[in-house]
Image (cartoon, rainbow over all chains, first blue to last red; front, side, top):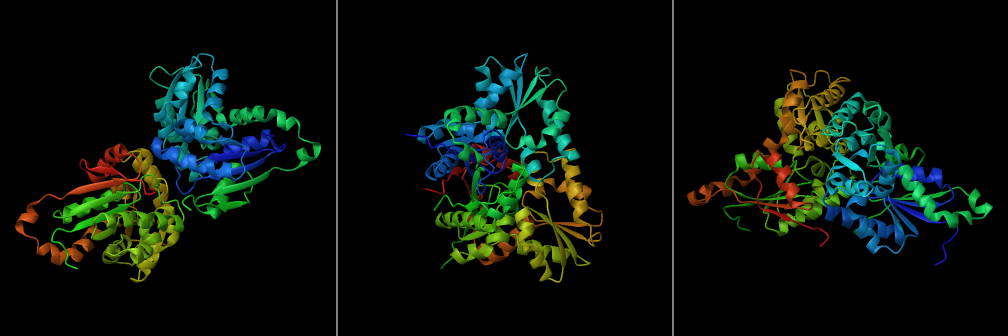
Length: 274
Length: 274
């Protein structure tokens, strides 16, 4: 198979959080085309079982592949934790999740090999981060923070209540032998939006790792050759962005812009049952 | 059609909230059989569009009808607000929603005809409560409170943070000409679980209306004749409860017990795509 010079990257999430990964991709690889799938009719995945999440994720990534994605980014910690192997098994193109890149970044950052990971209930229950970190010789403490996603979606980004709730969660996380954990992994793609609050309430000595950045770097490395072969003309072109959402297009446009940090235009409604 | 003496009542919700309605039904009509459907794989409905909610609700209520429900209770404010007419149109049995009974209770309660309704984003956007209340000569103010459902599901029922968030929402609700609203309708079946907190932060003069109670009364009135015909033997029988959930059975059992206030045993997993 010859890789076209301007690759189409498929980015999948249960809803809006994956747009923080798309944002990092656009900064690092601006000369690609992107297809983004938000399974907004069935979000959130974070409170659901492994079987349900796997079924939904496979349907969504298959859709992206059928619509031209030549590389798939599973930009959702829950779907990566619960279904990455199943998505890979059913996919004809390379698949990148967010957990391995996040764990690799944490491993580079942590000096004392003690890392705290915060995420959804489903991500934490899967222990996917703990496994990925232990393989790198790191002790991991995982903590579910189910209220943070709704707070971000309510737009209470800088709210005093968000700070209180984050403080409760982080106090519980940096405890029981992890008082001196030196790295905090944002194990949910919603959390970069409240990074300022998390920075404020996390212990001062803690480094914060956001897997969006490291995932984008992994994708760039994978595409390295085809990107360097792109002609000057191709590089000058702006990225083409196309969005698919299973719930309201209007809502995707409005809420999505907050995550992506730019206007969202080309959104199509998809009904996966059709 | 002859109504069997011991009717099977189908109760439907997106997840767990409808169990507060089932609880009220069990108190008022203990001599029935109940089929409960929680569409837990696709919850919450409260942030989704009318089209999506209607499609999901029709699938779920059809399932209950196919499994023997002779009367359907749509125990979800969002589904009632967005899809009651569509469910009724496709159903072969009587259908009861929670909004008309809730509005009727509020109408009996309110002296100055100014009522505040709190609910999910979707329920509030539909203005179903406002219409139902205005038909009764009542001025209504509707206020979306998207964080209350996640707080209940996190189990922060008596938490100081829940109280702060409830206070913020109710301060915004009892404002702009509704400072003297004299009735508060709990327009979401999750909210009875934080009734104590809401009572504490609502203005003292305000009466709280919970549509679970009034919905159960409407169902009892509809069944009146068949219930009075039941034999002594039939009346002595305990209710039979059967539950269907689209996500994890184990999670339904655990979280559901908190809403129903009793153990949940007979739960079956349902995949609506099969």
